[in-house]
Length: 315
Image 1 (cartoon, helix red, strand yellow):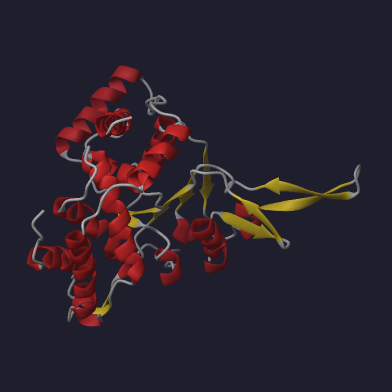
Image 2 (cartoon, one colour):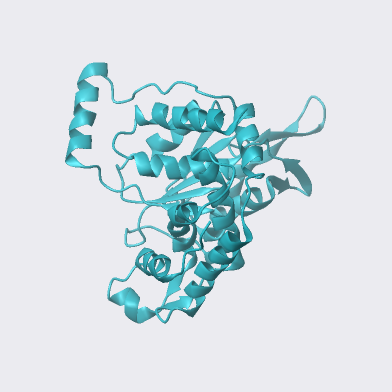
């Protein structure tokens, strides 16, 4: 397949998801780019903003197996990973896989569960495998975790530890729909007489794996690499930032930029690709100092200023 065919397929997936999720074109493209980059996604927003609908719609359009875990304070690690059950007939233990054995896993309201349960996802997200009773089991590819969380000011939430936050390639906010989008949602509801629009399969998971492999071969010029490193370095030197991005943030921008180039039908990365992904790749990796945090300064604001002030290479 040539690059334009990949672009058309990617646009087809996004277009199919848009049938169910109205007025969030930018969010949907960012999520599709992250999936192509083999990344896990953290969606942080208030309840009722279609976070769960987006995850389910993408799994349908991509032809992937989908499972959902509702995180609650009493959820146990075995509820995620699975467990061994004694088989009386064969006098041995049989493994019953948990919901983590899927292609796209929706971890709904992940910050409702205590840290011990949250950490059950860590090995799977990083190593694409789980270990139970000393036995390691590989996960089927593709494997993408889409986690949703409520803002930390909500009662009954446990903030994700930095180690787990770092495992997510991006953090995205959906936001409220515009007035026109909300009216379109009501019009659609009248037409289909249902709260849910069926999202059809556009590609197979084998084709998604092919896209992911293709993104790995997108060319990144040395000047673009220097640009990425400079952006991340400036997060560490910013006077409002207590802890800047780790090198994992540098790699995140690198991978996402390649995927963005593929989504735009190019076999090379340009500075606009980097700018388009930098904020979602870095915002959850910065820890602000108390003073700016109290004033309401957000990591996204600081990253935007860094992008504005960093010299852009000429390609």
